[in-house]
Length: 327
Image 1 (cartoon, helix red, strand yellow):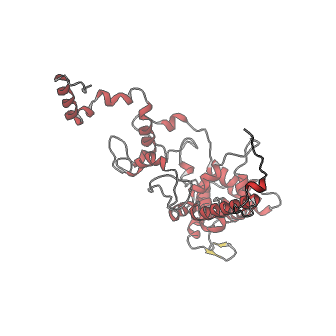
Image 2 (spheres, rainbow, N blue to C red; image 1 turned 180 degrees about the vertical axis):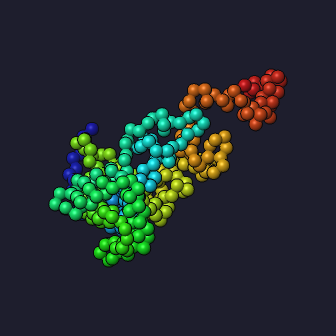
Image 3 (cartoon, rainbow, N blue to C red; image 1 turned 45 degrees about the vertical axis):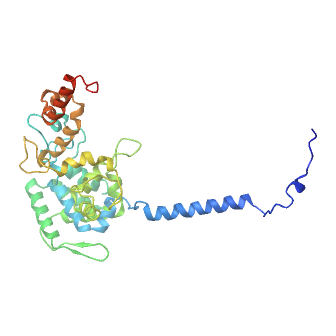
């Protein structure tokens, strides 16, 4: 059989054709996909909220920053008396009967609030500032009762302080001793960003331990107010990285659920479990399926058999009747 040879022009004769540019079509497709992705990202993406730092806090709410700094210096903040793992206090130690995991673990992230948060950073910035150096000497040379008197007066004065447009805080005249100078320099140091850096100082090459600045922030009211505004309070169900009512890590609902129900959120509690030790209790509940012995309690106390008694009775009846479907 002889195969006829037909050239391309003859083969496509009479077939309607239009010019086609493959590169142009690919370019248009990529532009279209890019535009679609940009639109979706603008509508559905999470908000890009900048990180809260000591610098941003001191600029946004300097009065709250100074109130917290003076509280750190007087040792009256939550962290100052927290307890393990930060110090030997007992303000936030949780236990359940003889179970006291915090005390057993001990202090392994030592925090001395007055020195670590205030006095030590200020001491490192005394070069060229004779007024600050003199104020530090006067404060550290005073008795503990005198220090607390100055700090109490200063805290009272802060309640009626005025805030200028440039962020300057003016406290009414009073017996503050050297505290007013120390707090003025603390605000200046924080607004410059220097306090953030000084609280990260460690013996490691990479500064990855943010415990101190985070604890300082947590003692203030500024970050708590931000959490309330962005619906991230502890009484909101679920945990999320994103702010506002955006989808977050919904798989953590099982852990956070316990904080919303009694006895974990109750002041009176039940069997020693209450809001006073809710963190320890929630961790214990989540670990129950992994603790040998405790995880076997449902088998030893077969409440499930009482609940499913009708089902088990039916299974026994079918087995006695010789039903092949019975287990």
